[in-house]
Image: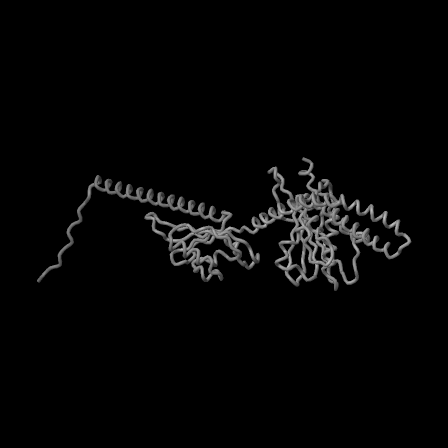
Length: 410
């Protein structure tokens, strides 16, 4: 019969061995704690760098979209969302073709993926859900890893709508300046012989005072000469650069007085003036010159509505800030004035020409009113633009510098 074996007697460890073992465990715990602390510091540093790079990406003035080799979006910064009108978070991990209805971006990215080099810069007009049509500048570049292999593509988008408008305005200013110089020379050359014609027609009128038929012919000549002189005066007014006085000008008060003065503007039946005046519409300008601009715009609006309609005039202090050229601590605000009609509007092909001298779609008139108005507003360091759709009326938008006492006293 087998008897159960007894457990071997436990070996007793000496106090020295126990102390060494405790010291080893303590060293191990300290090393573990140091490793954990180093790991936490490293994670914190990585998170800080990640947030720093993310903040840089979100602060870029250029829209940045990064896609992988399958054209799936893995980066979509805030500026890209502001330009395209899309929610960046909702676009992540989705293919370009699903996010954008146009295939322009996909084609440019595909070209970069194929050629593995930066694409040429492309400027295109695109449709956005919040701003309508905007002009954009688009470029791409490959994303490379350490082995120089492409792992994605960066798509850069810039909104150059305002830059495009400024370029067009600069071209228009150069064109108007050249036309003005030529017009001034021609006007002086014509005015000299015109004075002689006027003089001889007045003498002839006296000699033919008893011949009514011939007298009427001479009167017709005299009337034509006066009409030509009026056109030449408008030409000279267009050609010269106005020098506006820098004074406080209450635009609300100026517009109200215009509609009360029948000698300045005659409101026909069927035209319904609608005013929406904002508070504090004090501009820095010349009331006499600005009055001439408003008269031109209001008369144009009235003539655009022969069957009647609402003539809407609004003023408001613009929230858009413009930095003055001297880069001072102040930013100049503008008073925005809108004159809108309910006429047939301006066709798209005519929009680019409305401020050109002698351009008119009317049966009468010199076509200089808007050109003169443009020169006056430009002399005020302001802007004048027109927005219209054929058959839906037109609105002229003016921005005139706001009276800033602290800035203007310098």
